[in-house]
View 1 (cartoon, rainbow, N blue to C red):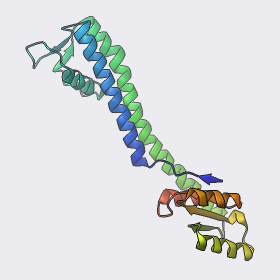
View 2 (tube, rainbow, N blue to C red; view 1 turned 45 degrees about the horizontal axis):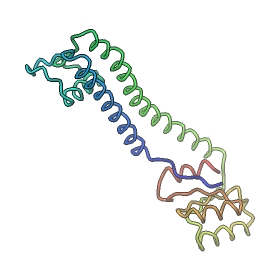
View 3 (cartoon, rainbow, N blue to C red; view 1 turned 60 degrees about the horizontal axis):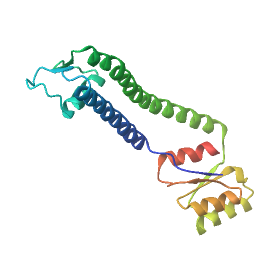
View 4 (tube, rainbow, N blue to C red; view 1 turned 60 degrees about the vertical axis):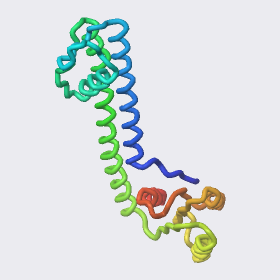
Length: 193
């Protein structure tokens, strides 16, 4: 039973930021395209007397609208521009906020759940052993423990090598792929016991 390491919290945040930024750029492109091809003059920029609505303006307008800042320097003035704001940017705002709230909730919930599981395991388990590395020395340690009548279910192996993890699993030893120096890997090992 091999397990792979899951993505780090920082990696998950980075992925969500990329998703949100890509989503905002897509919204900005749609706003810019519709403004320049179907509704010229639909957006009024109080700071630009030329009346040109550039892609930079679309990014800025989309970003401040979606993030609920709304400075009011660029405003939708035609019915089509207002409908776009109401039916395109408002759902976009909800999506972005759900992504951020979901990220925060996931981290809080995940940490709480892991702490609860570890506490439950600590109360329930005794005499369990985590073997960090299943090379020659790790295998010798496992063999010695089995010779001393430890049960295979009390043992968990952590190693960076996928082949070694498969070998441990083939020998009915619970095994986790990852670095034994990472806290989340050690926590996962504790949950297997």
